[in-house]
Amino acid sequence: MSDYIIGLTGGVASGKGEVARRLRAHGVLVADADVAARAAVAAGSAGLAEVVAAFGSDVLDATGALDRAAMRRRVFADAAARRTLEAIVHPRVRVALQAACAAAPGPYAVAEIPLLAEGGGRAAYPWLDRILVVDVPASVQLARLVQRDGIDAALAGRMLAAQASREQRLAIADDVIVNDGPLAALDAQVAALDRQYRALATASRDNAIP
Image (cartoon, rainbow, N blue to C red):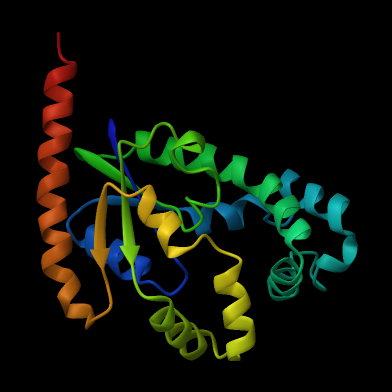
């Protein structure tokens, strides 16, 4: 059981996934909010039923599953629609992440939460012990997003604008990884944080023992 939990966040195309992959290589469980969000609106789920009730059956594809591409276009063009979707998905994601992290082996676990700042920060996730932000300049995010997703700069710009600002994410950070260089530069940063988190988890556990 992991009693020490780290929240991992960062803007789209910041490199959160690369940091998560390296943490997993150190034997750390990383619970992914994106995976939990997909499960929350899986075919036949109560979450998907709520989405259909809110948006109509045209959000479904031919198989009865959520048409994710259409839904993404809709919510990034309509802030009210995005808030409605988040109100359905986010509570389910929080419950799933906390349960997965609490059940994890090892001294600490990580919850990878892309929309941590947007979803209420520490107030919404009071069970996080620390928050790690992967930081990158917006210009780098934009270029990576266009290349990664094969989208035009206008849509990429709207996706960035829909998220919290760089300053808002940094304001909730306990730790920061700057990922504006080659991916290999992440190795040493992640290794140092893994050592730090293991020490903090051990100290927290020892302090909790009467």
